[in-house]
Length: 247
Image 1 (cartoon, helix red, strand yellow):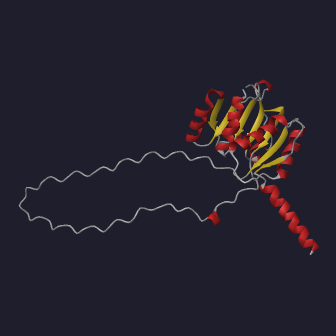
Image 2: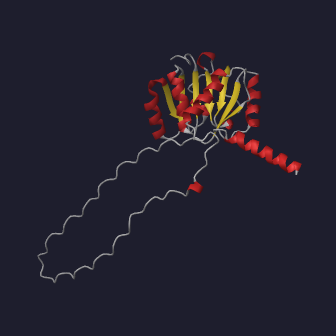
Image 3: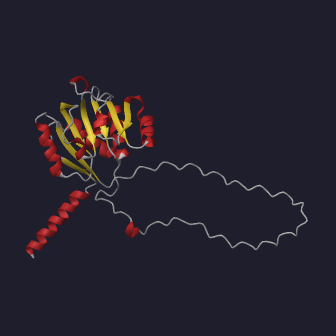
């Protein structure tokens, strides 16, 4: 599959599951990818899952360090940039090719901030859009290492002294029962969005790549990827406002 062949992309997302999902699809499509990941464990996982199709570096230093893998010359500039913080790409980096695309993946990004960045990029024909993830299923936690078996204390050697033996020890009190994890009451469980299920990082990645590579005449847009929660909340607020006004 060569859907993204010839494209150079930089992915810098603090939510590693979303960043990794975007990077995977880019690599599978033939793109050259630079991925910034936070912890050594996250970088090791990314290198394992992406193989030689991506260059993984420390993402905690910011987009400038990751983007530094790209030169500012046109032949080495990046075509696509994915990040979950508007502040990291304002102003737009010089190593992003004119005519390229930026997709912000921060759920808290405001529509006004995305539009302002899109206006900044217009003079360079750079499209700037955003996805706003919500109700996304958390990535499974890495398995904990097995606990080491307890080491038994060595048995005391028989005493050869003539001193009187120690009084018998008193029986120990019974141990407390093992603790159990208690599931939260159903009323405390997070409610599902209108579509009736949680989303996945892969679904966020597909939306982000659509904005980056398919929506070629769209800039300044913010697309909720939350199973309809934001849209439904707006409709509910509008109905309540109308009802109060008519009362």
